[in-house]
Image (cartoon, rainbow, N blue to C red; front, side, top):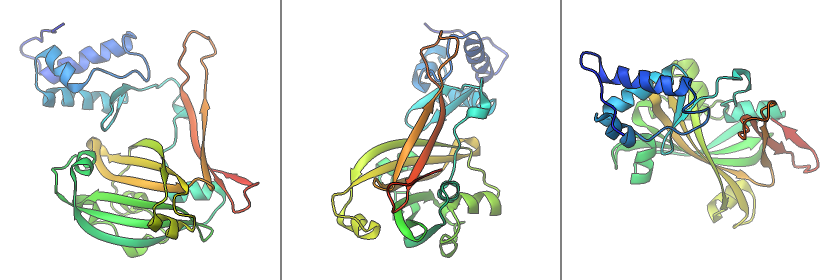
Length: 271
């Protein structure tokens, strides 16, 4: 059903207020996906640019969050102290009791293929930076990263300092570019001959692959990354919290953390 907007008030503001009211009145519940930009544009008879401005206002007020390729979702602000942490490799290793280091295997410029350009919100074949790193825990290979950054951010990275630092750390501390959120996808993969050699495992060994897009202010992608973890060295543990009233079937995600195994598999390290 089309919703008619009033004259004299900015359209994006009216749409923001309408969506805000829908959320506050419970028509859209925490973690529920909102209609797509196209659907909202048709409903209000406006452009997607107008819809995007309205959604950005809601995101700034922490009423919603957005994931590239998935859409917009209502935030759950009932238990802010239970929000899942957004961490980098060094932080994960430190919490697990390991010393984190990296070996930069390759740094270069490539033309972004269509799938990668979409993740970074760029035109296909735009020149971007690619950084490949072998990640170590106490000197032992545990993961391999391929990271792609738009030139705007990639040119700020100093590869020779990535042995003991991270991209997060460089951008946030030196350039005050905050990483505000990340969207993750976890899947399984098999080690290619090259990956197997770097990770010191057999070709075809199972890997845990994490695809992550990290965003800064204004919902701008800072980088897209594929990380391949040795599945014999890491697993992820999920903690769900049930509504004590028993009225909701939803179980909000309270904690989602990596657990790293030492070379002595019987003694896992909790991040």
